Image (cartoon, rainbow, N blue to C red; front, side):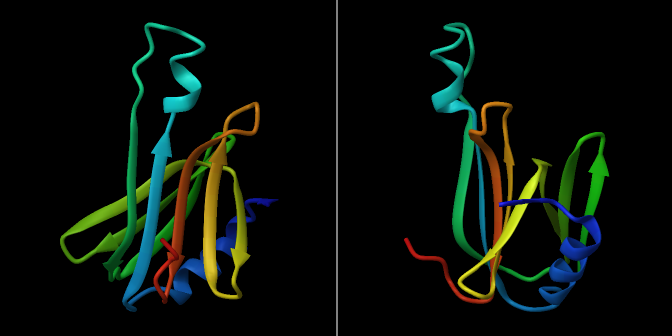
Amino acid sequence: MKPIEIDKIQDILNRFVDKDVYIHLETTNGAYASHINDKAYNVGAYIRNAKVRFNQAKIIKDGKIYRAGLKMEIGWIYAEGLSDWEIFENEKLLLAGHDRQGRLMVSLQLSETPFNY
């Protein structure tokens, strides 16, 4: 994966605007938290192949990390803590955030076709 390049990512996000797209959004600290601190709560969220349409997409820098937001007709989807990106299978965008040890903490993926499951 490559470090986020805000202008490049914004251009890619704009290609998905006003289209039916599939989303994968995942957050976790589960496997990383409880073995380090037995008082830590394991939290996470996972959604795959939700079909959405958004009319605006924006990526912004917040300190050293990035946040991507997708504005839908009646709500928002966003992921924060992003740091890296890549295009895979020639069309799918993967945005991810990793902790200092390189472990995945957040993932936002967009595609015009469903993801494998």
